[in-house]
Image (cartoon, rainbow, N blue to C red; front, side, top):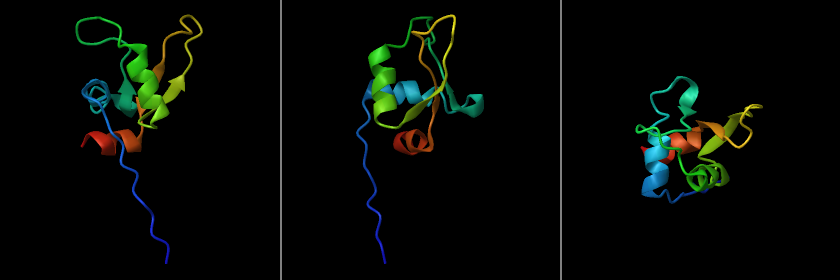
Length: 80
């Protein structure tokens, strides 16, 4: 019998706030801008990608620097 270790991911408050914005969006789409219209810091998005909490959804050819992402199952579990 194989026992799978559950990977515990440490999520910062900024990452948690960012990921929570995708919980009620279709497909778990994560925003590029916050509620006040400010750009989500790319370092937060990149950390979520590195940890597997978010994944790239598609590349925007008009704005290639924008990181359009969606929430992963791992991301959902990490913030609940």
